[in-house]
Image (cartoon, rainbow, N blue to C red):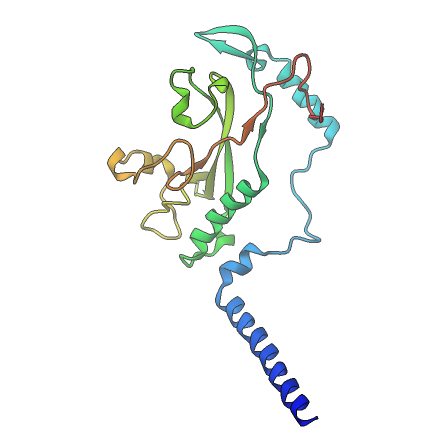
Length: 219
């Protein structure tokens, strides 16, 4: 009986110590708390009724200049991409990188007005596309890429979460970063990954023949 009481006491102190250590770790790492924020009960901004989304998607697809690939100023009969897909884990990782970099520098994340720009873009022809790390079949197709932003005096300012600059809580604008010489960019890669400042497309989705309108299906 005495041994059982001793064993129970030891187990009790182990459990208390375990939770105490975890509590101290959580309290000592506010950035970790930021990444595990609970959004339950918080209304989402920007939701669009699917019928309205269908309407504006059809307007876009009905514009031949946008729905088909142009080449040397002329419109071809090749349908352009109508959607871009991103892996959810990749998006979460990119958001994590933005928040973690600034939080660990002691910045007040909420005061920065963080966000993302979605830029429309177009890949070059097949002779140049490999430097972007994508399949040559996407040559001349439209795409998008994402940039991290913070709120400036006149609007949202793009910045590189991997290279925020000397002013810890006012990241260097991408425009200023790009003006630096190529040797000072620390090996910036076009295809994303370590050292990259923007998130390139996930998977482009050229439309199936005669279909491809919003919303996409499994067929």
